Image (cartoon, rainbow, N blue to C red; front, side):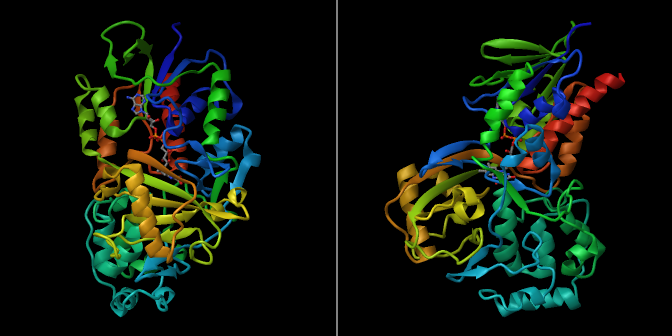
Length: 480
Ligand SMILES: Cc1cc2nc3c(=O)[nH]c(=O)nc-3n(C[C@H](O)[C@H](O)[C@H](O)COP(=O)(O)OP(=O)(O)OC[C@H]3O[C@@H](n4cnc5c(N)ncnc54)[C@H](O)[C@@H]3O)c2cc1C
């Protein structure tokens, strides 16, 4: 029998997790393992995961932590033998920058949605109208009828009003997705919200944990213990270890070479061919983890059903990381960071570009030093690309000015690094779920799609997506 050949297009965490699964996961390769080749366009593997040397330590330049209460990433880390490097988040809570001051977020929010009017009663910076809207939802809820899918903003505006939506809920959800609540699909991004809204009555009561409608996908496992983990040495440091162990298992990993086309072969032992500028690999199966618009282009000519993926646009993000001497700026006394509502006015031109600050050394104890703070500034949204039009020097000057406004002062010197992530975050717009289901059901046997465009944004979701795609592919062969 001809040896099976599987090509994985894209060497981000979903592609590498797929390769791990195909090589037997925790137990390792069995008899007659397939040939596996991972092809990555960039010189570095890892996609949105990577590390950099900064202010005397190794710091993530992309994702810096992951949900501990979803099992996929924690399981992978343990399978790779790195369980002792899991580091629990060292702080909790966050603040909102409202009306020129830091307002600690109250307990009991579910992705920004309060679970009772009382929980926001004393919140500074929120008008009495917004608080009244919450009381109205609790006691005299507005009716809202929902079809198949609807935006998150449509639900929260109708039930809780505009101010709660844009000042509270949008900074939280928009920050994770780099998108706008008025565009993001409730079904795909916040299933608990749409479930709560469908129940009718008070949205806040229906979404409260005691109502049984928990946020997140079905794999969400409520447990005791930390909410987030990182890996000591950086989440991105896992990529080198994963590569090492995959290569030990015989996986061929190629970097700095883009896949240019995936073709169907009319005859022969292998139904597909995967092209790069310098090679063609025959394949029994292909797992595609590239951004959706790239994926649509790769199959042009024979798989026109995938062209709808061109509708899935992606937002870019920019992260500017500072090391500043302790005491040189006024930060909130506690918490992992600050969320900044969109269109917040300031003393400079137009509105603030900053969408959030995170305090890396508070989040991750192994990064803490006695003499500095590591502050990461997040910029960029699906409809705010201003930061991508500025060069690094101009951007740093602008961000320093914004930070001086937000924190009262900001030192003009100190180490700083700009990292850009163009088109890195696919936008799950209304109808996304249906589009993904349709596209997947049109795939020929042997082709699978995985990654953050389909099964949720976040490291655990991407790991799970890659592993499920690999397992499903193997399953079709064992059952046929
Ligand atoms: C700035 C940022 C911060 C984030 N922070 C967090 C966080 O703190 N916690 C969290 O859980 N999640 C976070 N996420 C989300 C998380 O990082 C992603 O869900 C996950 O890393 C995506 O992995 P992936 O493999 O699905 O996609 P990607 O990482 O995008 O990998 C896709 C790969 O395909 C490659 N590729 C593209 N075109 C081609 C081609 N033609 N041929 C071959 N290869 C190609 C790309 O170079 C890339 O390596 C963050 C994302 C970003 C962008």
